[in-house]
Length: 587
Image 1 (cartoon, rainbow, N blue to C red):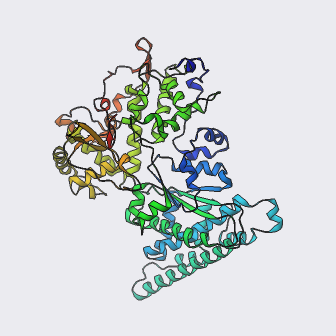
Image 2 (image 1 turned 120 degrees about the horizontal axis):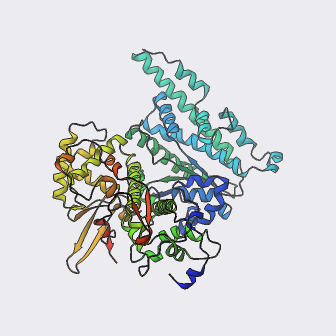
Image 3 (image 1 turned 120 degrees about the vertical axis):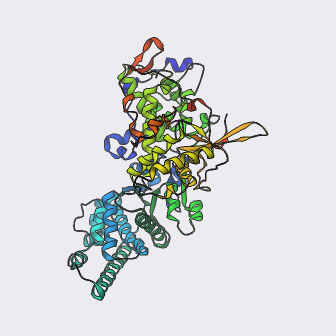
């Protein structure tokens, strides 16, 4: 730490605001001002405003929602933006509407177009209508169409959209369906219902398009759609994929075939879909590679130990500290002030690179965890964390739990939570090995599959063979692999979050290298010690085995201010101390 940094009046730990995991919390009036200071304006922020961008793609926690919230809160370049988040209830209603009308999967896009037009119309009125327009009647035609299709104009935009396409006439038909009808009469009735619904959707779409086309806007408007990465457990995977594929197609169709072609208007309307890369890949959209290259922004925060000082990840997370000071200071200097280690600059951050998924949410969660435990231990009046806080068991345990929670939420798109807990038991059959070969993985898979034969699984595709399960763990960043180059004796480390890009959206794991368990997550899934045969035979979910280790932390000030738990020994975690990168040479 420099002498200059020591003389500055840095804010005490207890006075720092806690960061939120979910950027939606920064939409409130109270939090907006803090978020404006905290948010790092990257090149991607400006690129989102480009008229040809329709997809904002990034891993869970990479900041997709944060970008949308920032643009909603700030009229950057006089753009008017709104973020809409789909919920589980809304998806269920949407799919039920399709089921009631007995439509084909291809009709999902038709339903979505009507809904998206409805939401776009409401956004334009909400963002651009002023007092003068009440006199001029500029938005009257659009408002009449909104009122015609919505019983309650005060409903949230998505709920009102459901009302718009689910008219009283359709409800009457659906409710009057007689139970027990069959044969030709039943088939004819379903055909009639489908025809009526299609006509209603087409009528809704055309009338809204006509009304929107009549507007001459002064500013661009962007509607961000979030929340499609979470699949409700009550909705089967195939049905959900068809639903959100229809959404993606509707977004593309409206952007390219309608909004872009409206004449006599300076401002343009655009819809941007927020989506994970694996979900985008699952949609299997037509000409998807071109859409990735030309119409998408891919958020990537990954870095290496050698390059971390110049990384946007450090700048974004260091800004959490620098933005709360009463003086101007760089993100790098602010980070080192609070997490500095004598004679070892960047030690805490480089350790995090080995034990996280290289996302802003990961680092901000680490800050929140360390701040919580420091303040509980009467360290809150200080303006620097203990130098070894990142290695303390109470901290690594909670951070590991967070990482496992991220993996669990990520995997929820593909399987129910009950299945995920069962799949976690696989790691007990690795017998505590943090590094293993494909042969050892296959042997563990056979033992796991034998146990799984007595259990009920919904997502059975990962039980097909060892390669399928390995690819799943690689996709969710639990397992990576290393490769050695004989010519220069260097080792390269590969993780899915590092390999995935717009040019390689679905990277494949290699079975020829050494497989590695992510050291940051190992504590949460009971890896790091040899399991006894008796423990391996238990059917309890591995996630539940660590409850006995939890306790209230305290500081041992005689030992340099380290955190210890009552009655718990402190051990160094093996794999976390090894240098690891991801597909690049270790610095």
